[in-house]
Length: 283
Ligand SMILES: C[S@@+](CC[C@H](N)C(=O)[O-])C[C@H]1O[C@@H](n2cnc3c(N)ncnc32)[C@H](O)[C@@H]1O
Image 1 (cartoon, helix red, strand yellow):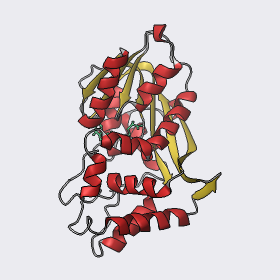
Image 2 (tube, rainbow, N blue to C red):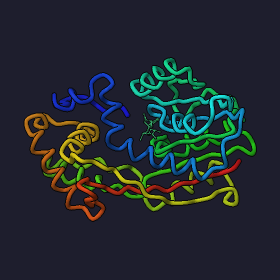
Image 3 (cartoon, helix red, strand yellow):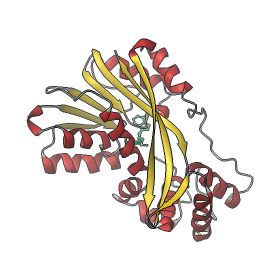
Image 4 (cartoon, helix red, strand yellow):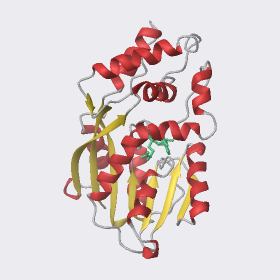
């Protein structure tokens, strides 16, 4: 995700520079999207040899890595991994070269994919479809177009995120009068993800809809909160005072995170709940 870096506090810049952006994401929200991806892959039939998979909105290859871990190298699965965030793609590409993985990495908008119709046996968009234009419809149409007849599409979206309200409360405390950049369209009731799938041409009878939960877990809640503030605190743009009020923001975020009903302590670790809607569809 590319955010405006105007007024970005030095603390955020230090955490996010270079590959830091990817490691910060993977230590926070990315650990949760990886649990969603593992859950969703477990709902599919085993991916057969010679499959051609699209890891759409791939980030640093969360889905691709899981597929390769659970399938033997001789299975001859080919993966195309695409995203618009070059920093994430660079991290994936480096690992592809290092490990000779069968993954073609490229920078592509999900709304205008360069692949021919009927290219993929599987198209998996893990926590990405709602970022695409026309309230997700443009990305979903491309998923259907590029999927082979009989192929499987997996899309998902957040249902609940324990850390969303705390981020909003910190924003409101630190930046009074500046509206919180709420998503233009809320997907948390599961209606929009089904609607775009239907509008893109998938049939209701071809769709399986499920929900599942995952947990962000940390033994250092302040560190987790600081990384999350660095990654998501600038969602609606940083302000001039965010740098000097950095510690105040992080401490307040910790306070709100610990107060949420979705937060619990397990063996000294803080666990924060998130859940997803999943749609698995056959073309
Ligand atoms: C929440 S991350 C999920 C990444 C990865 N799939 C995972 O499970 O961790 C969403 C990803 O969608 C990408 N993205 C957002 N809008 C996009 C678009 N229009 N086209 C392609 N990728 C996009 C972002 O760059 C980001 O890497």
